[in-house]
Image (cartoon, one colour):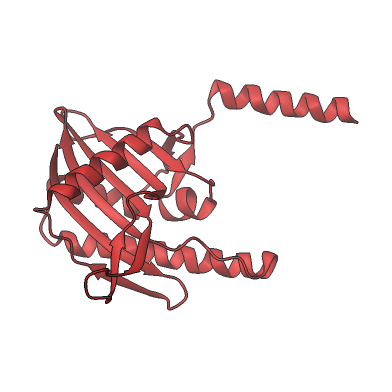
Length: 208
């Protein structure tokens, strides 16, 4: 697997700020972490298929820059991070008005562009980003959690012409602010979805 580029931004909803985190790409552990991320997305039963909404949407437009490792790429990923912060702040305000003291899961936004098995892929995901005390000098440091890695993610595949082939969306607790507000996706209704919806309606009738 080849990591073409990687960017990490900490999303702080309480302070309403985005912080860029420097990542050193020459570490072997990074490849292990990224491979584990991809496997988590592909093997998780919570993944779903979505289509991109029509029009020039922000995150979709940033993909070509990620895939091609374009100039000024930092600007596009920062814009995405600020977009997620905005959507999470709005979602937190809505949660506060309805549920009280319930907090959106803390995390950081990770952008990855990789090449594996002859296929180019892009990953945009919200990952666990912890503050821990170093056992060496007892200083407070930040790091990526290797056990609880993934909250929400989209994995995009490209064809040989560089066009989006398909995507997988992973979300432990499907939230509208992630797939609709942030990514600007529309869910694909599958035969399984139609069957489940029909069974639910039948169950409602039988219950009445």
